[in-house]
Each structure stands twice: as C-alpha cells, then as structure tokens.
Length: 170
Ligand code: FES
Image (cartoon, rainbow, N blue to C red; front, side):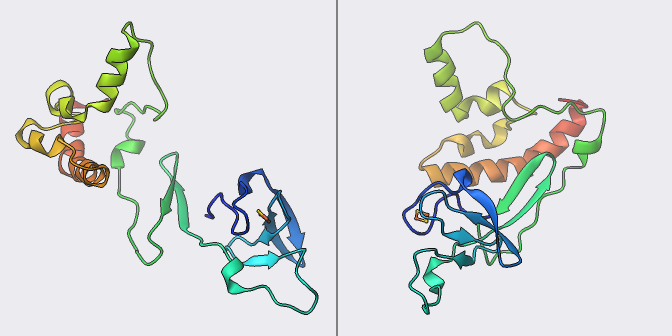
C-alpha cells in the first residue's frame, strides 16, 4: 500500500492513472506524471533530464497490507511483524456482523448525538459486555489522543471476545 500523496508536489495519487512503464505497471500522478511501482519505487519522471537517473528520494514509502474480515489492514510500522488478530466470531453465524459505517436512524438532537459520540467514558456503563468493563472504567478517560488509542486497543483484547461469547450474538 502506498500513501495517497505524491512525493513531488503532494498531488492526490488516487486521482492518477495506472500505466505501464517498460514491463511494470505503475500509478501515474495526475499532476506531473511521475509514476510509482507497487513497491513505491519511482519508475518514471517525465521531466528528468536525459542521462540522469531517478533519485532514491523520489520513491514513496510502502506498507504491507492485507484484506481480511472485510477490511484492509495496513501495517504502518515497516519494521514490525505484527499480524492481524484472530476473530473466530467473524465466520460464526451465531454472531451478527455490522459494517463500521452502519448506523440506525435515531430520534435525538444533534448536540446529544455529538456528545455521545465523543464521550468514550460511558462505554463501560451503557455498553457493558459489548464495549466496556466497569472494573476498568478509569481506562476510558482519555488524556491525549495517542493515549486514548492505546487504551482502546487494550480494551478490545481484554474484554470483547469473552463477553461476546457469553452473550451469543451482537
Ligand atoms: S505532484 Fe505528482 S508528479 Fe508532481
């Protein structure tokens, strides 16, 4: 997986075109035509003076990506060998799957909706057994953005699977 930003002038690469450079397929930037292979290596700079080679600084970083459980998982730590966690419930028909973007109509005010969305501290109280555990409710008080993210990851590992199995399906 490549970033969506061109190394040259930061154009949006996803607006580009797939082209062939020699025998290799590449993504051609829509702004000046620089072309990148699937590994991020810059394959072509149309404006490059003849005889000059493409500098290594023109290459894009690339990331390992896999599709599983209906999601694309990207490993942003290029040196990490972390894998995708197992979710045996995914193929278990006794569990109901919800898409991450799925929502239901609600009769509420917009301010209440925003407040509930931003407030993670209610999880162990309102969604206990699904998204929370009251015995570790202090962990849901975010101190900084990165801190909140770490807490959420720990929370899923600690409580989600046993609780979901206990309740049957969600
Ligand atoms: S911004 Fe992509 S080639 Fe210039």
